[in-house]
Image (cartoon, rainbow, N blue to C red; front, side, top):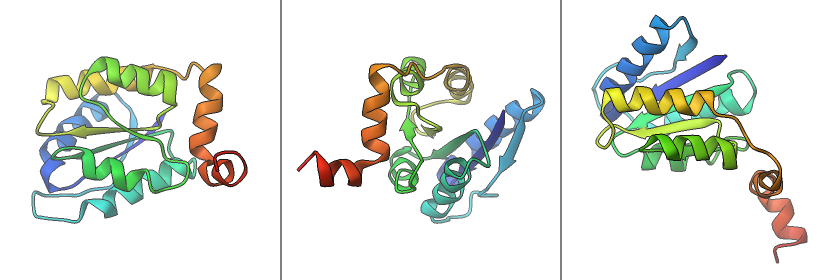
Length: 152
Protein backbone atom coordinates (compact mmCIF):
# COMPACT_ATOMS: atom_id res chain seq x y z
CA UNK A 1 0.00 0.00 0.00
CA UNK A 2 1.36 3.38 -1.04
CA UNK A 3 0.41 6.33 1.17
CA UNK A 4 0.88 10.07 1.00
CA UNK A 5 0.53 12.50 3.89
CA UNK A 6 0.36 16.27 4.13
CA UNK A 7 -0.51 18.99 6.58
CA UNK A 8 -0.49 22.68 7.20
CA UNK A 9 1.24 24.33 10.16
CA UNK A 10 -1.73 23.61 12.45
CA UNK A 11 -1.51 19.89 11.71
CA UNK A 12 2.27 19.65 11.50
CA UNK A 13 2.90 17.97 14.87
CA UNK A 14 0.14 15.38 14.38
CA UNK A 15 1.31 14.70 10.82
CA UNK A 16 4.84 14.11 12.06
CA UNK A 17 3.54 11.67 14.67
CA UNK A 18 1.54 9.77 12.05
CA UNK A 19 4.44 9.80 9.61
CA UNK A 20 6.79 8.29 12.22
CA UNK A 21 4.17 5.68 13.12
CA UNK A 22 3.73 4.54 9.52
CA UNK A 23 7.47 4.57 8.81
CA UNK A 24 8.04 2.40 11.91
CA UNK A 25 5.51 -0.05 10.47
CA UNK A 26 7.47 -0.19 7.22
CA UNK A 27 4.81 1.59 5.15
CA UNK A 28 5.60 3.22 1.83
CA UNK A 29 4.58 6.78 2.73
CA UNK A 30 5.49 10.06 1.04
CA UNK A 31 5.62 13.27 3.04
CA UNK A 32 4.28 16.20 0.99
CA UNK A 33 4.83 18.73 3.79
CA UNK A 34 4.56 21.12 5.33
CA UNK A 35 7.90 20.83 7.07
CA UNK A 36 7.58 23.16 10.05
CA UNK A 37 5.06 25.05 12.16
CA UNK A 38 5.64 28.20 10.10
CA UNK A 39 2.38 29.45 8.57
CA UNK A 40 1.54 27.99 5.14
CA UNK A 41 -1.47 27.89 2.83
CA UNK A 42 -3.26 24.59 3.46
CA UNK A 43 -4.85 24.26 -0.02
CA UNK A 44 -1.43 23.70 -1.59
CA UNK A 45 -0.85 20.58 0.51
CA UNK A 46 -4.41 19.34 0.11
CA UNK A 47 -4.13 19.64 -3.67
CA UNK A 48 -0.76 17.81 -3.80
CA UNK A 49 -2.06 14.87 -1.77
CA UNK A 50 -5.41 14.72 -3.57
CA UNK A 51 -3.81 14.89 -7.01
CA UNK A 52 -1.44 12.02 -6.21
CA UNK A 53 -4.30 9.84 -4.97
CA UNK A 54 -6.69 10.77 -7.80
CA UNK A 55 -3.96 10.03 -10.39
CA UNK A 56 -3.40 6.58 -8.87
CA UNK A 57 0.16 7.38 -7.84
CA UNK A 58 -0.75 6.63 -4.23
CA UNK A 59 -3.44 4.33 -2.85
CA UNK A 60 -4.55 6.58 0.02
CA UNK A 61 -3.85 9.99 1.43
CA UNK A 62 -3.93 11.51 4.88
CA UNK A 63 -4.32 15.24 5.47
CA UNK A 64 -4.12 17.13 8.77
CA UNK A 65 -4.92 20.71 9.65
CA UNK A 66 -6.23 22.43 12.75
CA UNK A 67 -9.88 21.47 12.20
CA UNK A 68 -9.70 19.30 9.09
CA UNK A 69 -12.41 21.38 7.45
CA UNK A 70 -10.23 23.45 5.12
CA UNK A 71 -8.25 20.43 3.97
CA UNK A 72 -11.48 18.52 3.27
CA UNK A 73 -12.92 21.33 1.19
CA UNK A 74 -9.72 21.82 -0.79
CA UNK A 75 -9.00 18.11 -1.39
CA UNK A 76 -12.53 17.45 -2.60
CA UNK A 77 -12.07 20.01 -5.39
CA UNK A 78 -9.76 17.51 -7.10
CA UNK A 79 -11.70 15.19 -9.41
CA UNK A 80 -11.32 11.62 -8.16
CA UNK A 81 -10.54 12.62 -4.58
CA UNK A 82 -13.00 11.56 -1.91
CA UNK A 83 -11.68 13.14 1.27
CA UNK A 84 -13.47 12.32 4.53
CA UNK A 85 -13.06 14.30 7.73
CA UNK A 86 -13.15 11.71 10.52
CA UNK A 87 -12.91 12.27 14.25
CA UNK A 88 -13.58 8.71 15.39
CA UNK A 89 -13.11 5.11 14.33
CA UNK A 90 -16.71 4.54 13.23
CA UNK A 91 -16.63 7.55 10.91
CA UNK A 92 -13.37 6.26 9.42
CA UNK A 93 -14.81 2.78 8.83
CA UNK A 94 -18.05 4.07 7.31
CA UNK A 95 -16.24 6.59 5.12
CA UNK A 96 -14.52 3.63 3.46
CA UNK A 97 -17.47 1.18 3.59
CA UNK A 98 -20.12 3.55 2.24
CA UNK A 99 -18.27 6.35 0.44
CA UNK A 100 -15.10 4.66 -0.80
CA UNK A 101 -13.12 7.56 0.68
CA UNK A 102 -9.52 7.59 -0.48
CA UNK A 103 -8.24 10.43 1.70
CA UNK A 104 -8.53 10.60 5.48
CA UNK A 105 -8.66 14.09 6.93
CA UNK A 106 -7.98 14.76 10.60
CA UNK A 107 -8.37 17.86 12.73
CA UNK A 108 -5.42 18.21 15.09
CA UNK A 109 -7.47 20.24 17.56
CA UNK A 110 -9.99 17.40 17.94
CA UNK A 111 -7.93 14.20 17.65
CA UNK A 112 -4.81 13.37 19.66
CA UNK A 113 -1.95 11.27 18.35
CA UNK A 114 -3.11 7.94 19.83
CA UNK A 115 -6.63 8.36 18.46
CA UNK A 116 -5.32 9.55 15.09
CA UNK A 117 -3.24 6.38 14.75
CA UNK A 118 -6.27 4.20 15.57
CA UNK A 119 -8.53 6.15 13.20
CA UNK A 120 -5.97 5.95 10.40
CA UNK A 121 -5.52 2.21 10.98
CA UNK A 122 -9.26 1.58 10.74
CA UNK A 123 -9.50 3.77 7.64
CA UNK A 124 -6.70 1.89 5.88
CA UNK A 125 -7.93 -1.57 6.91
CA UNK A 126 -11.55 -0.99 5.87
CA UNK A 127 -12.88 -1.62 2.39
CA UNK A 128 -15.65 -0.36 0.19
CA UNK A 129 -18.89 -2.35 0.49
CA UNK A 130 -19.99 -1.62 -3.08
CA UNK A 131 -23.56 -2.72 -3.80
CA UNK A 132 -26.05 0.07 -3.23
CA UNK A 133 -23.16 2.42 -2.48
CA UNK A 134 -21.67 2.06 -6.00
CA UNK A 135 -24.44 4.13 -7.55
CA UNK A 136 -24.12 6.88 -4.97
CA UNK A 137 -20.35 7.13 -5.19
CA UNK A 138 -20.73 7.16 -8.98
CA UNK A 139 -23.12 10.08 -8.69
CA UNK A 140 -20.54 11.98 -6.65
CA UNK A 141 -17.66 11.12 -8.96
CA UNK A 142 -19.66 12.14 -12.02
CA UNK A 143 -21.76 14.94 -10.55
CA UNK A 144 -21.70 17.19 -13.61
CA UNK A 145 -22.85 14.43 -15.96
CA UNK A 146 -25.49 13.36 -13.47
CA UNK A 147 -26.73 16.92 -13.01
CA UNK A 148 -26.88 17.55 -16.76
CA UNK A 149 -28.80 14.35 -17.53
CA UNK A 150 -30.79 13.33 -14.46
CA UNK A 151 -30.55 15.75 -11.59
CA UNK A 152 -32.07 18.79 -13.26
